[in-house]
Amino acid sequence: MSNRSEPSVAGRIDVGSIRTAGVYVALYGTAFLFVVPYLWMLSTSVKPRDQLFSQVPHWIPSTITFEWYRQVLAGSIIETWMLNTILIATATTVIVLVFDSLIAFSLTRLDWPGKNVVLTVIVASFMVPAYVNIVPLYTLVADLGLLSSYWGVVLPLTAGPLGVFLLVQFFRDFPDEIEEAARLDGFSSLQIYLRILLPLMKSPLTALALFTFVTTWNQFLWPLLVLQSEGSYTLAIGLVTLTSTNVFQPGLTMAATLIASLPLFVVFLLLQDYLIDAVQIQGTTG
Image (tube, rainbow, N blue to C red; front, side, top):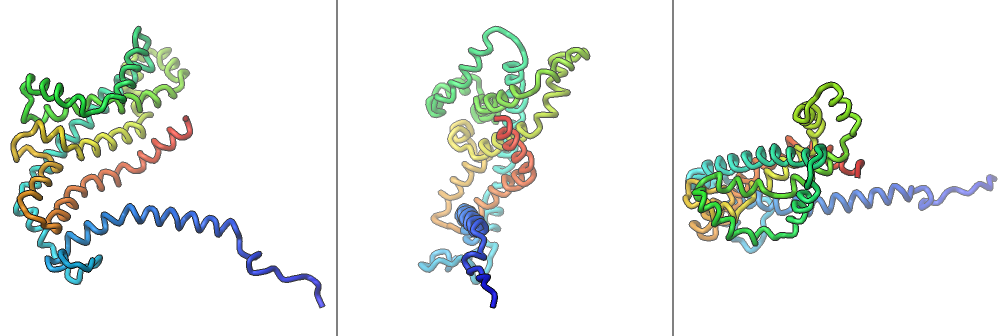
């Protein structure tokens, strides 16, 4: 008869595996909570009218209808609003990338008097609430004759400090030896910026582009003040107008919101790899 005791069931279960499984359950459960509003939006947009106002919630409609999408596309100028939003968000993103990268390059790689003061002022501007500048900014745009103009929306949105602050952190981590070698080879400052730094900054620039595009896409107050005709509205303004002209139609609202969200979802899928790379670079360099 053997004296060796059999291991208990509890002893055969790897404690580390249980802990890992618990972490995954918690993470996926939390992630699912963020997805719930989008699932409800999708479900509501394809429900028939009688289930929209039912006291019993129907996550999966008994009958799928695309009537709300047909009403949105036929009863509004949502295509024009989407085109306006794409133009404003794209122009703002391009201007932010060009000017913020040039400013960050001059603050970190060039030597000129007063640059630390300029950087301090840019960082300090984070402390100023955006709504404080609304009235003087509106007066300035009106004096320049840019009301009801896309440039009246785009130009103020490009003046944020976040892009400069973000790129300064990455430009500072660029090795001095590479820049010195390039100067010995006869590269000018502009050539170093265009041919060496920009190709290496693809990930942070893409992350900044994604953040700027999404932020501009969701802007509501400033475009509402500047754009004064229905044909020049952005999606954020147009959706509110659509809601006010149709009394409590959740199916219509959810269909319009889903259509407005699709371009952002596509942009995120296209750029998500660069966004993850930028976060990893920032995490490893500190």
